[in-house]
Amino acid sequence: QVQLVESGGGLVQAGGSQRLSCAASRSIFSDYAMGWYRQSPGQQREWLGLITTTNTTAYSDSTKGRFTISRDNAKNTVYLQMNSLKPEDTAVYYCHAIKTDYWGQGTQVTVSS
Image (cartoon, rainbow, N blue to C red; front, side, top):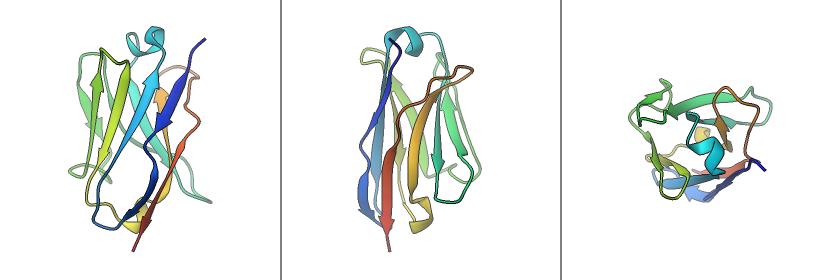
């Protein structure tokens, strides 16, 4: 059974940092690039960045320089390190196996001003 399980969300003050994790089934993690997305109430889901199976990364303009994606192959886990957080970063964050239908359940990040 394919699973993507996010964790690490919570409440953080503006200017702070948070690291999200996404634990994936080995069959997915080893074969697909992994992406991070977020969605705020009333907004469309926004792509934040991705990491390929060979550790190449790409980021959206809104997160470049503040967010970093990494992966730990031994743990089948991908991470989203978020720094210098702003209230507008408040959203539900999702991981996704690129080019599949597999998404995590999401984890809420709330940034207080």
